[in-house]
Each structure stands twice: as C-alpha cells, then as structure tokens.
Image (tube, rainbow, N blue to C red; front, side, top):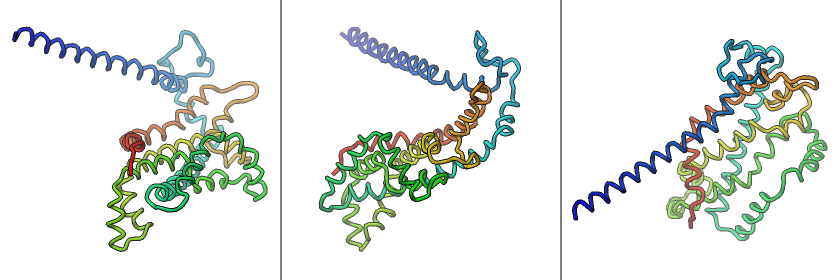
Amino acid sequence: MRGVISKRVWGRRTMRQLSRALFYVLMAVLAFVFLLPFVWLLTTSLKRIGAVFETPIQWIPQDPQWVNYEQIFRMLPFGRFMLNSLFVTALGTLGNVVSSLIVGYSLSRLRWRGREAVFSLVLGTMMLPGVVTLVPMFVLYFKVHWIDTYLPLVVPSWFGNPFFIFMLRQFMRSLPMELDEAARLDGASSFRILWTIIVPLCTPVIAAVAIFAGIWHYNDFMGPLMYLSTNIKFTIPLGLYMFQGQQVTLWHLVMAASTVAVAPLIVVFFVGQRFFVEGFSFSGLAGR
C-alpha cells in the first residue's frame, strides 16, 4: 500500500516538474520571439546603408557603424526633438493623472445624484472612434489660434481620460469606506481625504496610469502631425518620419534614431514594472 502511494506521489511530483519545465520553455520561446524585432533594430542601427537588407541577415555586424548614432544628431536637431517629446509627455501625463484622479475619486467615493449616469456617459465616450473628432478638434484649435503650439497636445489631458478614470475608480472602490468616514469625523474635507489618504493607497494604479499616459504621449504621431508645422517644435515621432525621403529612406539612421527614442521607454518600464502589474491586478476588483 505504501509503495502504491509513493508511486502516486512521485508521479504527481514528476508531472508537476514537467509542467513547470514546459512552461519555462514556452516562456523562453515567446521571449525570444518578442525580443527578435528589437535585436534586429539594434543590429540594423549599426550597419551600413547597403547592408541593411543583405541576405542572409547579419545579426552581428562585422564592422559596427557607431557613427550612425552621431549622424542622426548632425542631420537633424534630434536632441531638440527629444526635449520636445519629454516636455509634452511630462505635462500631458501630469494632466491625465491629476484630472483622472479627481474624477475617479468623485465617481467612487462621493455620493451625489446622477453619479452612475455620468459614469456611464464617461464609459460611452470610450466607444467613440478618435478619428471622428479629428476635424472638429482641428477647427476648434484653429479658431482659438492654438495651431503650431503645444497646447492642443497638452490641454485636453487636463480634462480626464475615460480609461484612466475607469481604472482609478475601480481601484478606489476596493478601498474601505470607513477610511473616509473616520477622516470626516476628524473634520477633513474631500480634497484632504483624497490627497492624504486615498492617493497614498492608490500608488500602484497611479503609477500604471502614469506609465500608460506617458507612453501614449511619447509615441503620439497624429497629434503633432496635425497641430505642429515648425520643424524645431517637432516631437520624436515626427523626427523619425523626417528620415524617410521621397526617393530613398535611410533605414540605418531610422533604426539608430528609433533605438535612441525607445531607450527612455525601456528605462521607465523596468523602473515601474512592479507598479504596472500591481495597478492592473487590483483595478478590476469589485468594491463597495
């Protein structure tokens, strides 16, 4: 009897180990597949223009052209493009976080007539395709003389984002209402409760919102393309587009510029990946 039980235990343990090994192998294969384009990006950025599309592909260039990275800053004011992108990203991200935080707090922690109807309306705006509002928004910004400025890229962020409002609301609903009630008994106002109690508890989801907003503003191409016309005001996506000519595209320089452009995003992801995961893990929990 003991022998039969030992065999069963050994069999279950073996199956568990095989399943875990299979899982790790699958994850390694997927990681390789996802990293392959990035590896090709790096290797192509170090090639000569004539070696970009050579077959078979040289994954390790025999003569790395480090001068490609220097050349992108000589051909175009790429450093200024990066500063412009960081400026727009910082203001836009701050606006998204602050405005969405206030709206999410109101929709989750405060009781007022029509709250659920307003939340349904906010969710309904997520179903509206962005392309529908392109022309009306351009006409509006043209009327107020905001064309060729950063205002159309920044100001709308200070009026909330439906997806971010939803994330913050769901996270806040998972927090006990007793926290608010105890603070109100001590004489705290709604804004004081928000900034001193709710915000510290919402650090993971706020970080996730900031990462999402930052990546969106940093990679935005359509907005700067529509509203900016002066080269010195261009952001990184428009700067990358300038490397593509009508007759020939300098792909080795495009890849070098893309590598420089993606570096800040990689740093932000590795620094904030813990908050990113935690924010997603708790944003969907049902609350009070």
